[in-house]
Length: 346
Image 1 (tube, helix red, strand yellow):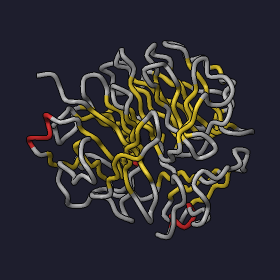
Image 2 (image 1 turned 45 degrees about the vertical axis):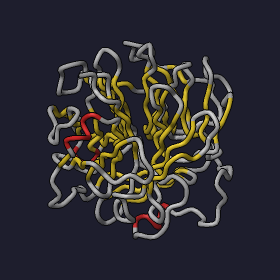
Image 3 (image 1 turned 90 degrees about the vertical axis):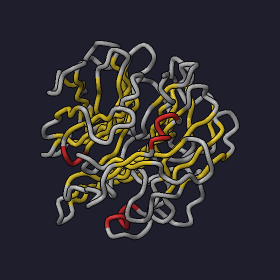
Image 4 (image 1 turned 135 degrees about the horizontal axis):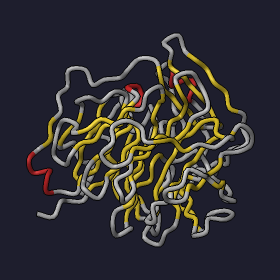
């Protein structure tokens, strides 16, 4: 997922810049045409505000201190839920089943301000290592990465992998400023194989790959509201979609090929193919990086809120809240992305 404050953040220095009204009702409309404001803090951290959302990258690298990676042996047989924390410099591991579950593991090795995550069909966890300018990958149950993909001079915010093993990273900006782009690495490559870009890219944030290996990117253009562009499989030529009510969200797809992302009205939008106009249905769910299970019965989101950080699980059909995970996060280490990994076939 991307690093922006979902809902209303409060306090904690930089987080004050992220604050919207603490009394703003959930689901309140926001102006998707809002001007983009940018501040560079003395630390060198960039804080970019777009409506109610805030993007942060650069400045101090955030590590988990002296914490060492670990995972409970029994966790290898469970459906795993990962939650990344940019501020904490770690990825927490949970069993997907339970009620306010305690972590059964934590990844810290080689992680620097981790944000977006993706689990591929080989059960590899890919993590956008924002302030280290790379993407790292962990095998299921491992506590150190097995590969590092170099993304020099760019801040990767989100990551996705297609069925051929090509890895894509949404880069918010370069180290010298806009525009952002998408770096990709073909299977086995550790240095960039190429980039996806558009003349209208300003800030690039969300990314998703559908079942046919088409790549979708959410971005803030040089003018106008947030938009989504599709790059057909294997192509570096993109076409902006005539999709409405979008926001700067991570993108995923359900089993019906519906595009799923947070919409501009602070709900979870679900667009049926061919992704024209507004969402075909919405759910009263608001948070970063919607992540579905294989049955598409449940969806998880990261509630990136400094006052009330948590991961939430909802029924994908009704929007009913099923689980809330607060254990493992606090006001100085909040979750920004979630990813789900079913157990390996033994």
